[in-house]
Image (cartoon, rainbow, N blue to C red; front, side, top):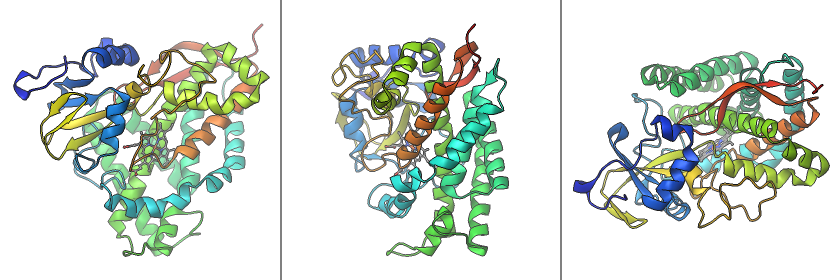
Amino acid sequence: MAATNSDELRGDWDPSEPGTMADYPAAHAQLRATAPVAWSEKWGGFFTLMRYADVAQASRDPEIFTATKMTVIPSSPRKGLPRLPLQKDPPESERYRKALNPFFKENRIRAMDPALTALADRLIAALDPAAADFSGGFVEPFTQGALGLLIGLDETEALEVGRLSHLYVHAVQGEDLPTAGDLSRQVDAFAVALVDDRIASPRDPKADIVSGLIANPPEDGAFTPEELAGMVRLMLIGGHVVPRNFLCSIAWHMASHPDHLALLRARPEVEKPLIEEFLRFYSSNQALVRVTTKETEIGGARIPEGCPVALNFLSANRDEAVFENPMEFLPERKPNRHLAFGIGPHMCLGLALAKLQARILLSVLLRAPGLSIVGTPKWARWTEYGVTSLTLDLRARA
Ligand code: HEM
């Protein structure tokens, strides 16, 4: 039941309930039909927008749905660096997006292709083909390598980020919030130290994001060290955790759907729509949060002022009002206007990098002598989605 009056509120769903976690898309489908603005009593209480139209409307309306109070639920028990631009509304957020944009442009990302392909080849060659730890031995170092190239980290820095991200992912997935909070502080400290280092010894402003942001200050004034660290901070976790689940989900899907692997092998032009369908189907950033600045109505429900509201991108991407046969994976789906990267003023900056990583992964999978799943993969929990831990047998089938 959708809540319309705060006195009548009751829980429509609990994202951490085992039945729901076992099949988020099925739980969402039911809620879209019965409680599209779903109330949950968890974590202090919050609404979730399940329908595409409502997620798009709230994402585009920062005056009513602000990102400045909270962007994830449960929020980590810490006060630390702001995540920039995510935790600012326009026009303030534009200061950061404008400055970051050149580093995420397609030609800069395309130039990373040879180095990332070489990294992928090295990583795959080092795996045990009979029981390849695909998530830990391939996807994790691959996404960290990509992030290192994007930001301009040296090897020691990249290894430390990798270590912290690995521990952070496991703490979040194990719902160990105190440890996640502690690690989050360590990631903050890393970002602050990185900025201090680049202020003292600037590097190539084209290859190194922080040096570039310092060398080309915005018209409305140079960034403070805290602003610089806030931008690095957002990239360090956002640019690693979500792509990890996305890439593991692609590998899992291809191992469980040999017909889709054969289709791509036979018709390489399918790659583009296939990657869009992976994004729609395995929207690995399941949800992000805004807070209402005043009482409002959306999707037929009344939401009081100051209430956390989750934008459920995964559910929006299975909305039957927008997608034909939304529960079916169609490699050549067209049109495919998914919201996996969000929409509006905070739409993902890293989308070209995510797609490049997907392309390189697909070429690795196509070249593998065999592809089958070993054991039972682990799936990510709210606020993420998709396969997070995966072992593969890469040997040719007898
Ligand atoms: C499949 C992989 C990815 C997915 C599904 C994804 C998804 C998203 C989503 C849903 C948002 C927020 C939209 C909103 O709040 O309205 C976002 C924001 C963002 N993403 Fe990604 N992302 C991915 C990969 C990456 C990568 C590799 C980076 C690289 C650092 C990145 C950097 C960012 C940044 C900086 C923002 C904040 C933009 C802003 O606040 O203006 N993302 N992403």
